[in-house]
Image (cartoon, rainbow, N blue to C red; front, top):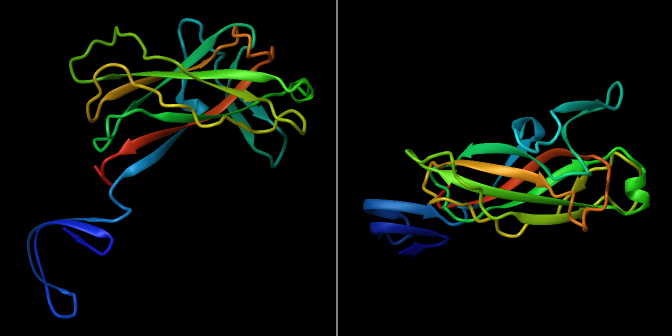
Length: 212
């Protein structure tokens, strides 16, 4: 049944003031706290360049004393290149699709002057206990992002939220899930020849409950 903004299963008896007088075998889910969309952030340091057609190794750019370092992966503008990260998905994952936003920057002023674009993608596959790692990644889902309309180099670029990324395999709770982050530099829509400096990814997943 329902009471206020909560739902319950079991037997609940209320007194004349609306207080719980007696309850048995009750499980309560408070409205707004029962699950839904959650986000997971992973910085560039959580990714590893692919062994085949990988991006450049992790680097750190310094902007001077008292300023932040940019810990990043450089994705070339002349060839398709990628990196991988993995997550042991939580038990309360809804086993559905995910979405993403990438955070990146660049060091050449020409990226702004010419309003260049970078084409990013993500694909993923899930592995359960006993599954072979010799499996194909899922379908790539792309996001095209421009280098900003104003300012100079080193500005933060945040992509639009992607469409649904379908995770390949047969997803189960607690699955070991591998994600591939790629720059598709050979696509005509990616017209920036410099390095796209990847800073991190925000991953959006659905959950069925507040906790595991």
